[in-house]
Length: 590
Image (cartoon, rainbow, N blue to C red):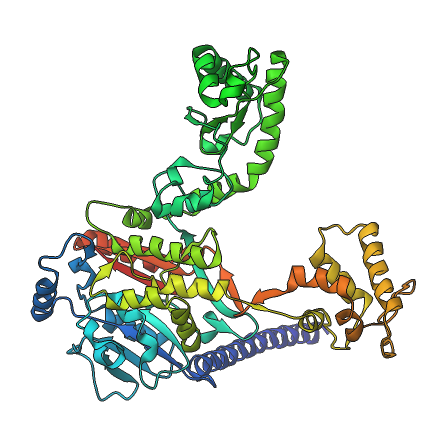
């Protein structure tokens, strides 16, 4: 019995061991099969061409070619200092070769590659390869008198004229490299539209004048300059009795704090101004009739702005003893109104890319890129109003040829000047910046029928209670009060009672149990003038081009590096790229 028991126990152990081993082996086999299948599917997806062909366009020049340098020097000789002909912009370090290799590795789904040159051909390029074509400037420039051109903005505004180019194409600089698999959905998706990659805010138009100060309703003397479009008209209707004083204050980030110490500083400032030149100040600021009277104004209240300036408005107040309370109350109102703008300043500081901003700041040598960026922003302000805009990320950009043609028709004069410029100049239209904000800013006018269809999500030709609730959330601030809902329902009932509309059956589950609304048909909504006014005021303008903005994309998807001839710096930059590889890599020569 003992022997039999031991045999059974040993047999059970062997059986258990074999079972576990078989399970482990099968798991490894299944995992390997899954891994192979996944790789096959992934590779097939990345190589799978799209129904609509998408081409790639490069601009390239061999700036190391002696003949090219000779032609460039002959052209710029004798020109004034308002042109940018920096040789490092044209220097060739074989970037195009490695950019093409990254394209073949991470985006083999592309249809065709066009390389736009001034007639130069990379010696290493296989011209027999059917997916690559060389395009000369003569083939795309409408005005041949603008050739030869050494200006990338002039060349870029003609890229969409390449013969045989796909309707949508992706524009690459030759020093942009893909670091990960990239798909068309990274640039355009049917459910999102065009993806717009933005980085940091456009640099200030002048010292101490970021663009958010322009046309903000307050007169800023730092912005009262042509390059800032004269502060957007903020100083046109300024009270003649208002003067701006520069008074040291806390840092702008701390101004938002309401505290006793700050209020005391303001009160002391008023007393100091009043004690030093109160009498002469009154005579200068007040109209003559008022100044000759025996009763003079007794209080100079202070209005604080985020520019660290104080506007001293003169008017009469009987009791000087309440100055401190007045200042406190005034500060609360001012600070409340300025909170949104101050938060913008904080975000601007956090997202600032120091390296690139240094490149954009004015210096002894003309920086045509920075100047053209400001020029383009002013152009957009004239057309679409003053807004805070951001610089596009240094990444490939998808261009729709039809949109590009509409952009150039809209700003025909500015693009004509850009094309005539042989080298970079301050009045160039910046290519990606203008294109992105044209897509963002263009709108279309919608009628009531279009607005009704937008909220008729179940396509029943009627508005359900849930769809009406969705409409209310777009019309009014949340949370919705009972009074708001009741008022809107009364409006619908009034329209229903006054009109004679065809009978429309209410679809099932359209109404809540306690709902008092009739069937809200499309005919009812389009025939109600009061409702039409409300809807058109809020929803009549809609984006012409569907798009989605990707903010701060420079820190998420793009690696931007400045290359120099210092090998140690180059190795260090490349190590940074290796350690945190992103989808696009941009190498800027200096």
